[in-house]
Length: 345
Image 1 (cartoon, one colour):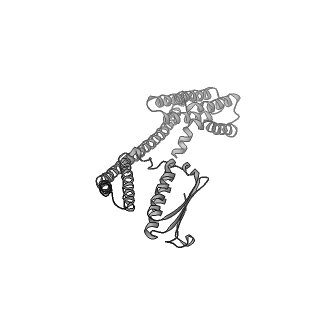
Image 2 (tube, helix red, strand yellow; image 1 turned 135 degrees about the vertical axis):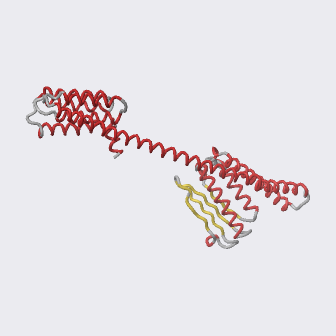
Image 3 (cartoon, helix red, strand yellow; image 1 turned 90 degrees about the vertical axis):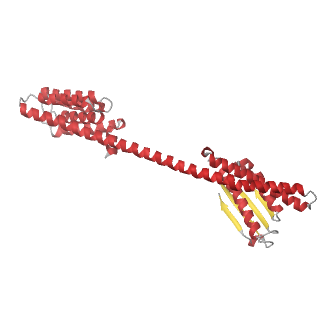
């Protein structure tokens, strides 16, 4: 009902509404009126035409339709049925669009038109004036109240939704702050301590075997990278504006993958990689996903296949799709029977 009322009162609906009223008016003149004169036709069509202005000028339209109805009463040859309907519609629209004194002035003008009916029967004219002027005002007020209630309910729903979103955002901010604090005070502290101790051990054993020094250097570099990632994560958690930021720029993806594969080879895993040259053209989220898939896959190979395993990484692009494949041969077995991780991104 609300949508239908909004369409009827919408300025974009004026042509359709005018066409409906014009067809109804012609039907009324042809089927209900008793031999209407050219003047009757003119008053009827003018009444239909004037009602189109009720969208922009409802008060003036209501006064004009009342004047046309009075002309029909005074000079018409048949009862001005179309004028009556047009005057009622104009008063309904005015009451639906305006509050205050305008609807009542227009209602008095319409009542005066009925009171001046040339029939001379004051009681009948008074009854017509009260009913034909009072009913449209009542209907218009009801329609305006319905529209205002709908708008009020819509505003309330919007405000409730905004408050709910604000409460959710505040709760998330509290959780993010708590997580960031734990990462900074606990995990980052331990990682920082580990990196520091590895660095001290590296300088305290200058005569250690080269293989041991290489392992210490790798642990130290990995720890520093982990600490940098943790600090980056803490910064993102503490600042909601950085939520859309990524740990990795697409242009840095090849270097990051090379670092992961280099550490895998240092741990004894023979990795053969085939990576598309245009892999830097993916978005930041997909770039980070590919890096995390590679890190997790290499970690699983090191855990389950062990040193000496052989693996092959393939990352290929096909238009807007990326195919990721990571195989291992199960510690020396043929790669065709080894474990396989394959997917489309």
